[in-house]
Image (tube, rainbow, N blue to C red; front, top):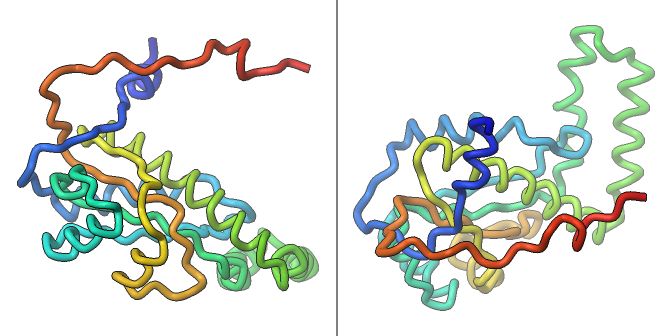
Length: 205
């Protein structure tokens, strides 16, 4: 079995964390440096993260997360946001390829035009893409965190409006999910919940 296969099987959602454990900022930055390599549609890099480790602010986030105890014990709470306006950064993102000659001016112009055509005026698509791409990045982050010895739990059990109010989020940033991170406080190892066999969720056509 490969190291990656072992990592995937070892990652579990932590329901409680060892309280008082600090994650060095440099280590978090290293994890995010790897997470930024996750796929994103048109390389627009829709994902924005907010890392909350301040105890008082973390408790306000806990209130918006319906009082869940793992938010209190986690070393940090990471809010994963999707940027509905990520497409507006396309000219800057692709300008380097243009400067290097990897894109011709015609190809550059066509790329920017096609991106704008897909996103402009299409609120539903902007939101869907923001959440889709933020979710891809979040999963990669959680695997990276496990590889670094940290445990995580993805969460959707929170009030997005309350979170937006606490953090004063601009309208274009959509909360996709939260991730609690720290050291799993395992009092006992719980058996993994039932997972469907491949034939129940995969069709080969």
